[in-house]
Length: 249
Image (tube, rainbow, N blue to C red; front, side):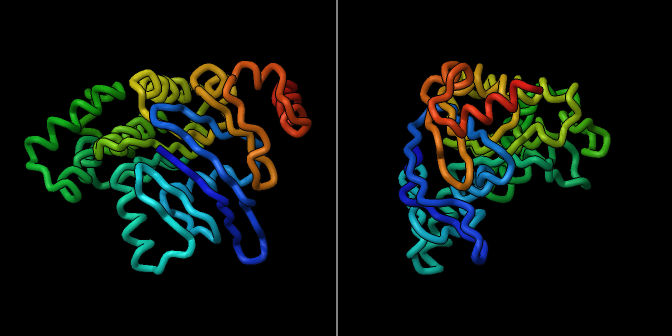
């Protein structure tokens, strides 16, 4: 599903990602964790072309994005990758002037050029999947943060992506609202969706992820295929230090 080869990303003289190479197969749920400033979100944003690669290349679902590509080729590659990739951000980014169902239908009508009746049917099915069917006519301002994030997930799923990227999707939520969003993500994992999740929710990462990528200083320090074992006994000193700090809280 995803192959990353020698990825590097710099902002001016500041190198945020250093020579990252990783392969993520289809249907795997990968949690990316690590201290703030370690490059987690930048790594995720590189996967669908939101950040331009400084060097290296990324292949997602057989579409390759190469730092050495010409601008036109790069734009075509980014467009192809995004056709198969959904992304959910920290902020919900819903259209405030559109209802819940209109937010979910938008990409179906504009990008997929669906008939309105078909788009509405699919949108209702997705809103039922995230537990918000009763809110179809509400506007975002009338929803809680957790409900807005679940609408954002439904909107991302509308394009039937093969891959879902989550960038700290619960970090902007009140603690009591986090569970509903995590339950939706857990259900997606059980359905076999390929997911890469940048998260601070350590219990979720341990219980739901198939694999943990621990990042620090712009590098993948540890690639753990056994999440429970990672949280009990990380192999690297840097990961041990991180887990010790997490457990103190």
